[in-house]
Image (cartoon, rainbow, N blue to C red; front, top):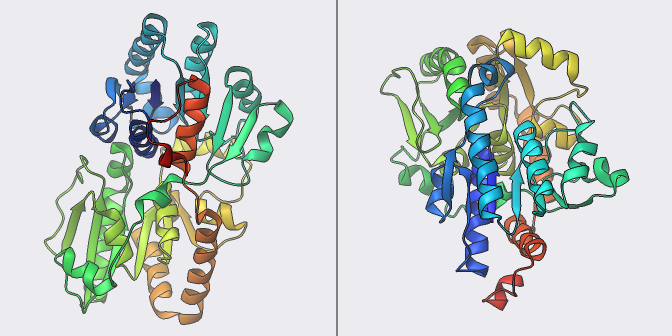
Length: 376
């Protein structure tokens, strides 16, 4: 099997899927494009994921992207895997799916591109090259209904990572924090470009929080293998690979738009969402997108549950103002938490990695799983 994951969140889903496949078929050979988490689950990487977002970043790294594509194309034609699994990353993966289709290799597209936001014509392109589609959000399946492509809402794999046990106080102690003091989490994003663009916002915001709330602990959860590009004061605690624990014991959070907003919502932590991209990327996105919101929280709710602060509005001053409202306006805070809990109900009881592994085995025409209990 070959799995193509283009960025950090997709790489996590690829790792969880690989783990599930290995449970069912221990002798499965999985290759792909990804990162350290996929490698740790037994995937042989032919190239690293790109971490890129935004038109400007992609243009700067076109040579690297093309080299990775050539490696993937060569693998498909020479090794002829039983199945190609694509995870989001549409422009690259749709082109790769065309190569697979020409070679007679079945294609499972896992995690739909944001066709509901922009470039809806991609729905037909995907339907022309994919054999099955597995989507993360309930509203996405409707976009593929008229194409004839078999599409299934499988749930969101982030739910599989939220096995939190213990009270907030116990979680704080486990992180080396004071169990009696309040915690605010600041999540600047996982991609290098996001970290670079958001670093000064985070630094100024941390200073404002520290000055205004002497009894508050500030934590900066980062993905494993990433580093914050600037030096932070000692009172800001950085944790690598422990985002879920940090969020679960937080009283509020400022979160860069992306999958982290969903994780924060599923843990019912009230938040403010912020984001900056290059002016060129933002201008083009405004021309092409048709959605009212950018955060997954508001998109899933169909209304503004959390404040979104973009571009110039994504300032330390405005984020700090919203955090204060979250902490001290009890009605506002409780209403937000109530709406966040409704989002969790949407995904409760689903096991997307197990379901997608079953779909993958079906498309690859592999034998029945060695462990029959895995299908239950």
